[in-house]
Image 1 (cartoon, rainbow, N blue to C red):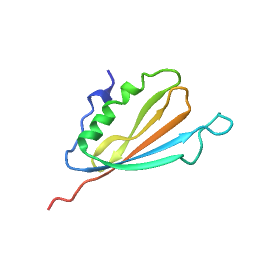
Image 2: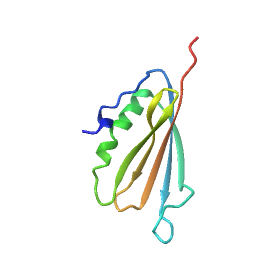
Image 3: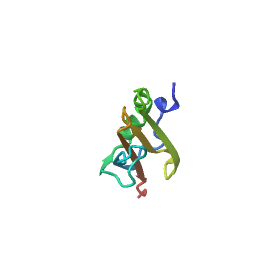
Image 4: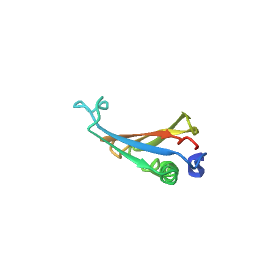
Length: 107
């Protein structure tokens, strides 16, 4: 069992913005384009972020060159996953999801 399957959010009061960038293959098919084909952002709740991170091991088991990996870094709420890279089966598209966090100041 992966440690991500048991992931819990270290703090319950924070805002999270998730940005998806989708990349396709270069014309030669040997690497990924430098600029994304599409970018979108959305605000997430702590519970939605936790569910997203817990689903990473499921998507890593698709096979045919597909994978899903989380990369952690230090943030204002702790050392947690901040980037998830997902490559579709057949390796035709890659999605890079980045999380940014902000903790509201206590009054």
